Every structure is written in C-alpha cells, then in structure tokens.
Length: 228
Image (cartoon, rainbow, N blue to C red; front, side):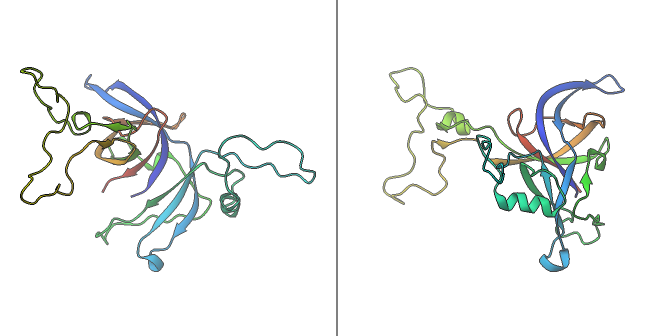
C-alpha cells in the first residue's frame, strides 16, 4: 500500500501497442523523503510520513540583517521536524501513507526508515492505484449545478427555473429532513478515485501517466497509492 505525493500537471493522450488512444492524467512525483515511521505494534497500523516540495523559511542572522520572504513560511516546529529527519530543506507538503491493508493481515508490509527516499519506481506499468486529491472549488452554487437537479419549466409563466422548489411537507413532519439537497458550497473537498491504471512511467522526468481523470485543478497536490 505504498504511495507517493505528486503534482497534477494536466491531461493528455497516449497510444498503446495496439494503437488504442488512451486518455491519461500526468502526475509529476519528485522523490519523496520519509520524515517519520509509525510502528504497527504501538498504534495498530503501519504508516510513513512523506514530504514534497520545499517551503520558504525565516531568515535567521545574528545581526538581524536581511528580509524574511513574503507569503507562507514554515513554522519553526516544521523546520526542526525536517532537520531531525536529516533534510536540508523543509518540505512544503506532508502526507501520511498507510503501508498495511486494513483487515488483511497476510499482506507484506514494506520496511522503511527515516531518511529513505520514495521514487516512482515503487509503481509499475499495469498497477492499479487510487489517487486522492482536492476537487476544484466552485463557491456557492445552486441545486442545478451542485446536484444536477432538472429545475422548473421555462414556459407557462414559471419564474422559478433553477430553484429547488418544495423542500418538505408542511404538516408531517413539519420540518426539513436532514440531508436535503440544498444550495451551498460546492467543491474544494477531498476525493479519492479508485481502480485507476498506471499506463506509463517516465523515470527521468518523474512522471506518472494514469488512465482517466483525477480530482483537482492543474497544479493541485495529489497522493497516488497502490491499490490491493
């Protein structure tokens, strides 16, 4: 159940040996360092913490010279956590990847140590993977776009074309049922796409070509994990 953190570059198409056109999502997954290892005997599951990218840090000098970089900067606790793992820079993204399969004690759990490097060679062409990302944020939307509801008629004097209409009976139970599909915030939520196939690996450029689409915008952070 090993995985790797990557960045979604977008979608393209490739052709297999049979000449079939295959739509793929290209994910750039640079080598991920291991910052922490969870012992299964202590917490009940085995996992590792991976890092991706490099965060901006505060400049520290004896005389206080120089300006700190603008924007988000890594906290001192994150800087110390990276140094403890032997890293010269602080990762911008941290994700935990589980190594064992819940409910399957027969699966072989790989052994990793702090400071190890995870590369895309942990995958092979033909592997089945699942990709977790954050879907595109679309703000506040109505029920037509958020849930695909058909809406009201466009003729015969109707003026409620995209409204939800009645949301519940007035007499019994005299309230709106929990979970009713209503307008609200749409997108910007964690989503995992399963049963995807690795179609191609580019070891030199650290690129993974995965069949189909995955959640998230171009440049979004995703986690690619092997699927048992």
